[in-house]
Length: 449
Ligand SMILES: [Zn+2]
Ligand SMILES: [Zn+2]
Image (tube, rainbow, N blue to C red):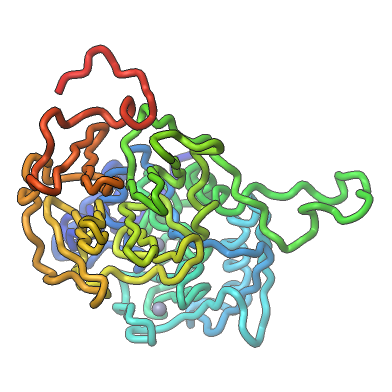
């Protein structure tokens, strides 16, 4: 039976600012221009670039997860329309859709600190994400590994209901917000619980995309302990509160993909794609690679947009509006907002540490580039320059790095350009294909340049 649709739902482009990711376009019911904003979650969407580049339209991770599976939660204040016991039951049901498909457990506590702190609040409430009265923003929540991890706020001014479309269904909204608290961002996948727009659907269920997302973070449910023979010695993995390692997915084929980022790190070349890393030393792929990038850099978001190593040996990673810094493999900073670096809301597509001292740092994005100064940790101006200054190189690039001889390389799609630091232009004979030159892939016969 077809899911019910909330009667007031509006295409995002009629009212929403352009920075919002487009909602699925197939399910919209237009409404009069005078009606208020479409009801939605207040958690900012991942940047456009990220979802547009993600052709498979799949779940998006926030970059953090809980490092334990048994979590507590506490409800601080309740909505006035509902009986407290109903709210408790609904919150438990909303958590259950996530615990059913993972090893996660949730236990309510009534005092003190809990991992997940649930509150119903109004307008400004202390986190710089004010609510807006009835309609519009319904709720928001904070990702794991951020400074307010575990906080879930519902807009007290909504007409909260349960199991019907006479108001805003608390079950739907709560289940969505708990997805954020567990580490999922908004997804571009249609009909997913993690879509940013509110739709009343009954019964509540995860889409395949939601389920893959949460299982990517926490794995599948543990087998019931009773179904196992008694183990001698410690029981590995069963009845513990420790998290299982991420289920590795198969890495993509280096000959078939376009890379997210490339950087020279400690004299070796690292190619990044969708949570995986390829490591080349002296032009040779090292044994054991591709490997999960999180093996080297714990907490690294996936995918990364750009990466570079600075002259002090710190490795910088960028994703969306945030950046991370590692000292070798040790996390030093992040996620931190790009605005700290003087960048105003432009995601970075590539970063290049150049010059003999690797102290000339350039960020590229959207056909523009910025010069970045390590001493001040700021770009010299938030107003970018046009990337056409880099003669012979396309203005939109995916990745950039410097080799041991001082040449810069720029990647776009499956092609790359080698850039002469003396003549300050791309070398003759480029672009060439990344796959054959770096990974020994067979060059397709019908290649044209
Ligand atoms: Zn949301
Ligand atoms: Zn809040």
